[in-house]
Length: 195
Image (cartoon, rainbow, N blue to C red; front, top):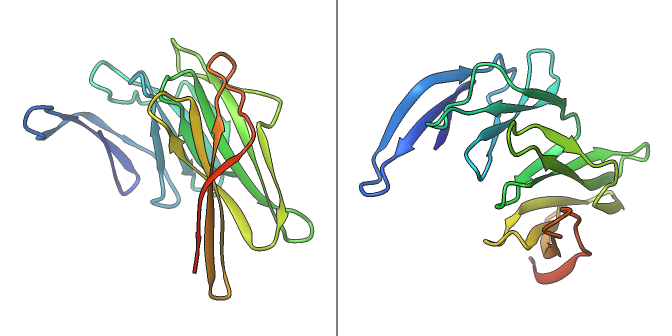
């Protein structure tokens, strides 16, 4: 289990019988500008993906190798620019990671896409596919979001949200995941709400 304390990441092992957490290893301290740090552990427990802003306000996606207790090593094995990454998910089978990128175009509209990364099983390093897996049309009020997978990793869940001028609404979708390539299928709506 990972816990963020200011700009440090602490590692705990949890006893599955008692639920008692014991801190292990040394903290991984980032020289972070903000105390917002996104942690996405590998489902295989071999690496830890960390989204963070450095003191120059640059957003990074770092990949850390972990030891047998899950403690991230002091230096990342990979550092990627994460300038537009608004969400990051690891598929439960440990083969693929997905990033939701969000930015505003010249008209001020929100634009999003989903990017696919293949995970190297030995190092945890990520290789980004040159092909966007999904695109969301430009919109002034709606933004996209990622929120996980089903247990087998055959479906990834995403959402389309609005919160503007007293209106709040979300539509939830799933996309099938090709187990061999990580490619995503089209959105299939399964739930929506509004107030």
